[in-house]
Length: 234
Image 1 (cartoon, rainbow, N blue to C red):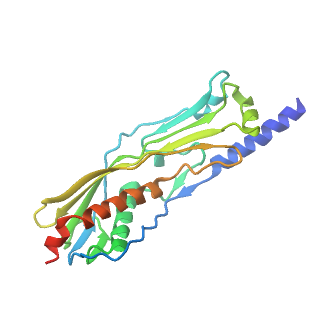
Image 2: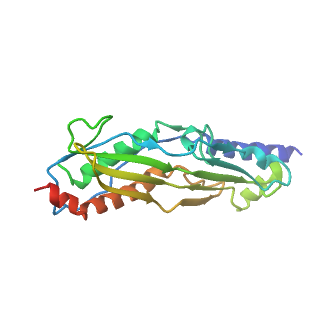
Image 3: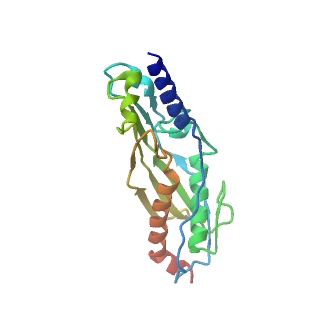
């Protein structure tokens, strides 16, 4: 019994260490080759609308109940949760502002416009980009195999301790600032990020910056290949 007590203490420490991990929003834009066509206009990226449902369900500690195989967490707004499967609180992360700021950085890197910046109003820009966050769904499980507090024994011999997934979907709209005419609109949905975690190597469960980079690269490609820039740069 004494050995089992120490075993449970060690496992609890390992789980707590994983849950104590905090992630903070950090974004770096993609790199692009010089463009053949560049607009001589400016574009302002406005704060995004939040189109997500506000439902977060946390039942992580169900894994401690005998015969229950796992403890799940399902978040539509994961930044509002205090605890995630492989991490704790996510800090300095506000998608309705961080996502458009990242897009402005992306457009500057792509060098498609004379000027690209984030602002709370369109001001004197030639174009504006509006965005709507449709999904940042987060799902995860702590796996106990129905063994309650003794489930971690199987973690130590190599069975998975957790599983997580991130989803990302958003809609982007490019408009003429003066007329509010829609020049381009498209919904972008990235491939879900899915990982299985082992107690000795818990993967990050905060993959949204990397997923956003993929969506924005596709958006930049769409704009660069669109006749809008050819028409407006003259």
